[in-house]
Image (cartoon, rainbow, N blue to C red; front, top):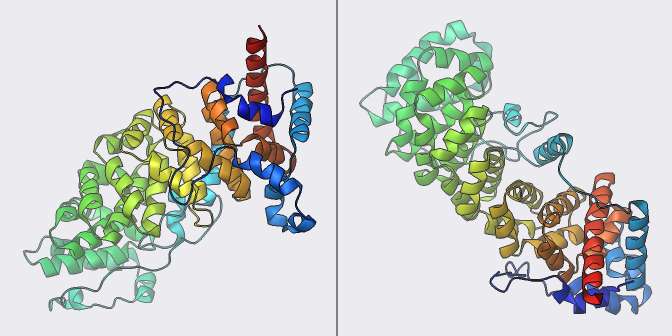
Length: 457
């Protein structure tokens, strides 16, 4: 039986192409020396019983740190006896659905509107957005005296009590205001439509049927940032009604939403990302959104945005990446590096989402290569050791994607000290995590057996 120490010292048994650049460190936060877990096995094994006082949430980590070589080999032997045949892993439709639902547990697009936006991330149950209210700068100038449009404070209670039929003249006045020569009038009209479409589905129907979408769309390219912000958020709110999605795409708004992603205020960028996410719920829109250049500015928002902006970008990228071409575009746009860095930010609320997007990108070879090159294996091993319950599931599933057809990646996983935490996960993880960890351990055992038979022949 091959010990862990032997597998580490004989890492050359897993052939590594010399031309392949592998970075085991991701950033200052994710630096991890090769074999860290294996070294700490020895150091912690002879320490006082202080290590046994770890909390319940640290249980799996403590287990992985105190596994000896013989315990690991015993566990591998048990798995081999359970299924001596080689197992070929491929994700099932049910598994992919569960992954999508699990991602939704951590996803909440934020915008001007109420909790209805939960539908954009296919949340299984009503859930408030991660962000309440708006986070926008004050208006730069007072609205002009134009009757209704003069009012800066617009009571939500009044809106809720008025029927769509009674609101029709008001909506018509706002749409006329959108076509005014005055920027201030346009701004005021867009702000009122934004609020009218905020909570009520019947208002969204009324506003769209009254012809607002073709007039709002050009304002996405308005030089006044406040008018642009009101227009993009109004379109986002309108897009929650299914029939309005086609009206918005037919008005040529997709490319203009991409323009907002590049040029808008922080709030405008966030709501443009959410609007694209809403439109991407229509399957045929995913390819056109990707072809319109949405992915590079989404990656930029992932890199440079606020916490809210990063979450919106992650959710939108996840939806778009169900299309292979968009996976390729996302990898080419440089998304993998920031995604790997987010995996290391445990407790930020984004590590799990980043892992799910990485899992999607691992579905293509370019994505697998980029994840490994950016030190993704090390970050995922860390997530198995220190992550949340869901994070451990996502991490082992992504590692399985990376290693299923690659002996080289299995070698990288062993070098990063992946076996002890995988063994611990196969014993103490959730049902799903146990199953995936066991499957991955079988692959690693097969590689060790093949390497041993090759060296002896």
